[in-house]
Image 1: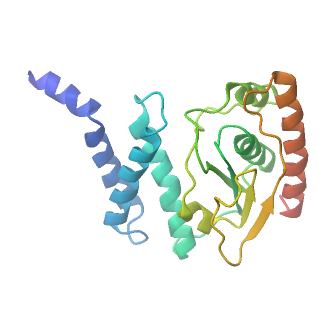
Image 2: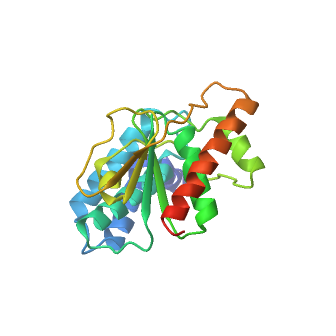
Length: 214
């Protein structure tokens, strides 16, 4: 193997990429989260997302983004990282439809005045394409979202946890506000049905943002 081929192999090796992410995130969260926890979260995120991801090419990058979200949530829950805005978490089963609709709308309508996360108790491999089309038609193009598993750290960091048909999968912590939205699952439904679901979610999201002063 030539030196060029070895270099390219290193660039494509997931373990090498993940190690770089561990170094970067350890520096970013220095004094807030210990390096061992950073390493565990990066590799754990990679393994967890790898169980459902259909395309593995960008998996290390997705794992880094997921780990960053989790580390931020952990630091916030520990009180060592200040929250810049109220934290809202949407949870459904697959994190491919309802929770993605709600998260995109909160981000769009709040214009940064609310920070939103979403997760699924049994995440799907990808976001429902009809849901993405409906969001795009509403001017809410989603380019970097993907289904994520529910973890304790994001629940602990949330100020409001909103569940959508995931039963008792979401852990309950004292002092947090929990809501359950009875929203129809868009999975397998046609465009008109998903449009109606999106309209329902938008009404609920606007009401939530009004309550939060956002």
